[in-house]
Image 1 (cartoon, rainbow over the protein chains, first blue to last red):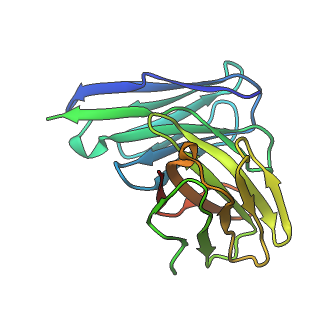
Image 2 (image 1 turned 90 degrees about the vertical axis):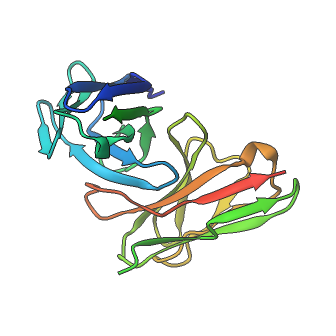
Length: 112
Length: 112
């Protein structure tokens, strides 16, 4: 059974600081996704990581994937208030079947 | 282009009642799925479909039925609602290659 764990579950940080969210998964996987969810809203796709060593960046967010360690990171650079949200990683166990297993999420609060 | 449309947005049921959550997409995606999200948890896959006439179970299928008569629509049926089915339900569709999932706005369901 695939298990996906995120840490921390809650993160409160000041504007301008850097921080990293971690996503560990238990079995070999072909793809890893990162999503953002604002309170009471739906999920917004951020990144799809397809191979070992993959790195993607969008604005102040950068995601990376280490398939050997079964670890993905979401790094936040110089945080701003607008990044406050819950961030989920999700793992696709088998390429092409598109069945995702989600982590429990990291609730990020950026303090001005 | 409406994307993924879910109706209703909110629903309150009594234990034992049945209802159908509607999901429609206008992007001609073959793959569609239903998730539920409970407080403090990530999304869990209920059922999914890889095309019209084809459905399969996800992680938590008990108490739910689905059908896929057209590419556009993927309704989720609660046969006899139970309080444990109180949750937020999200429908998603995925284009070929699965690089991104498009989520609907969600249906908030309370079962009393």
